[in-house]
Amino acid sequence: MPQKAIWLMIIFTLLFVLGINTGDLEYLMHLGNTICLSCIGVG
Amino acid sequence: MVALRWLIQTLVALGTNAYFLFPWGPVIYQGPLKAVCHPGLNCYSCPAALLSCPVGAIQNFIASLRYTAPGNFPHLGAMVVGYLGFIGTLVGRLPCGWLCPFGFIQDLLNKVPSPKFSLWAPLRWLKYVVLVVMVILMPFFLLDQYGLGQPWFCKLLCPSGTMLGALPLVILKPALWTTLGFYFWNKITILIAIVILAIFISRPFCRMLCPLGAFYSLFSRMTLVRLEFVEGNCVDCRACVKACPTGVKPYLEKDSRECIMCLRCLDSCHFQALSFDLRRPLPHHVEKPHTAS
Image 1 (cartoon, rainbow over the protein chains, first blue to last red):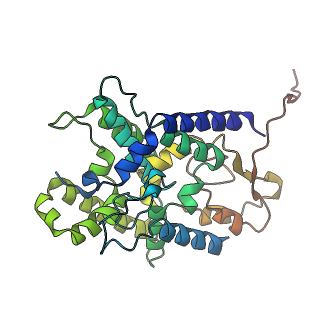
Image 2 (image 1 turned 135 degrees about the horizontal axis):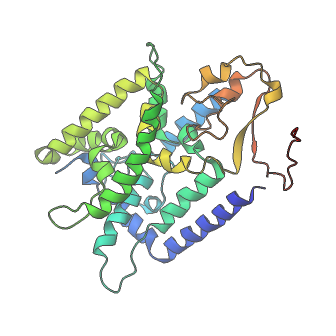
Image 3 (image 1 turned 90 degrees about the vertical axis):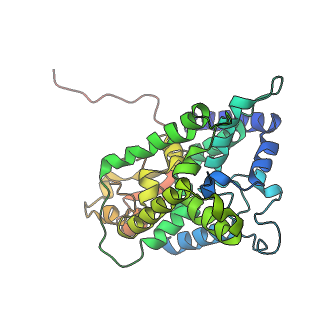
């Protein structure tokens, strides 16, 4: 197995876990539940 | 393989945009699935969208770094970067070819009978500029009148957001009409241009402008799975080049950053010169060829 890919996958998994533990999940949920005015082009 | 890809693209596009109660309930889906990012570009303001958009999420995370309250841990977006990085390392740009709803829409548009043109190769680098400038730098440094960062890619460019988010919402909520101005019409113009281009050029947005594709492509040289080229079997018929929707020459470019792993080249090759396999590790001791001194 290519070592570089395995190491990167471990690092990204740790990043993912770090994000979950620092409240990224709640932030994303809140974000996704609001209408994105920028996407519509308001302003 | 072609039929399987069409089936998966259709199922993913419909399955991740399956909130059909929006005319009667909240105008967008507001459930727990929104904590999960789509692996492709799919606007989270699309009324039917069940998942969040990873590019929109990253921009909002970066923009939020400027106004983190003292004592609070900043939202770095590590979860989304980890999620996308994991996918990128595992399969590279495969989500572009198989899972992205906006890529699927461009594939459908390219089916319209018309003369087909190739893309001027240097334009492929634009997507990296979009990723760095619009997705990372502008949301952090460019503040609005209230001192807040904005998701500038969504605001200025994203045609997926215009097609799947803006147009349905503007139709559903007439109250929004009075708020529409330069940004809306700018995005409509870009969407029309991309739609017309997609009829004549295969996947113009993915190849020129998509920051998600640019991010995934950073891992193309180290993905766990890859397209293998068996030189001995190649008869130089160039069928793979004709089949490739992103203009890759599989016999020349190994681990191309443009390859979306749609595997159309694999289907087109009748000589088993291409295979889709796990990346093999390099041998530890490669003997150098003897050269005459």
